[in-house]
Length: 277
Image 1 (cartoon, one colour):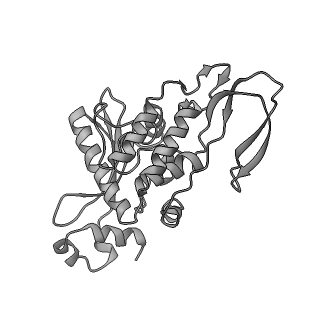
Image 2 (cartoon, one colour; image 1 turned 135 degrees about the horizontal axis):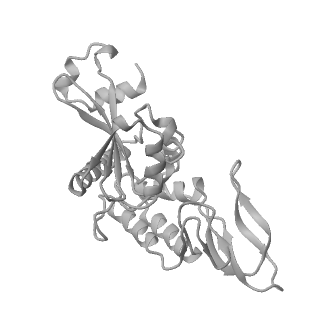
């Protein structure tokens, strides 16, 4: 039996499980993309239909950035998309955030296979993280005070989202061109974010930290003497400079800098497994 089907069966009630004698008894999964009307949020639900209930959501994804939402919807059939109002979207966000956090606490991170995995792959690391509403590209919060159950982690992300010096996607500032669609922040903001997640010392914080700093390799910017080389690099395929060589005879100017590597205190092994999929 495939892993995804094992997980499906594990999420059903005992009464429902009794009637499944073989894999063929499990009805097909259905995926629906609920886009908020006149908003910036979307929730993708993956549901299984059973004989005793209409449907049960077994996995989901939260999108908090209109650029990503637009790109995703260009690649999926219109038949699987629905428009939702603010109240319905907020309900879906809360349900999805809680489901993903419960999965994460049980060592599961998006284990269900769906027809749109390959389409979503380019954006997956930028989607909203389990138990949060501010961690990921954009946010899915109703307002500034709205936080997910992983509150400590979410506060770190919310503070970082409100950094007072940023370069928007594809924007230019201080003579620097941001070639990415997502915002880049000044280095002091990124260092504060790094420290906040590290001190949280919990699985949601470490998942965000490893993704942001080690996988996405987010760059920051600051005013410094001209870079003339790298004294220390990390990474095998994606190389990141951790210590720069500067020309101290030059004039300080704004430059981009690679992210500081994130090394969790306790959750390294489980994070490696969760992020390998």
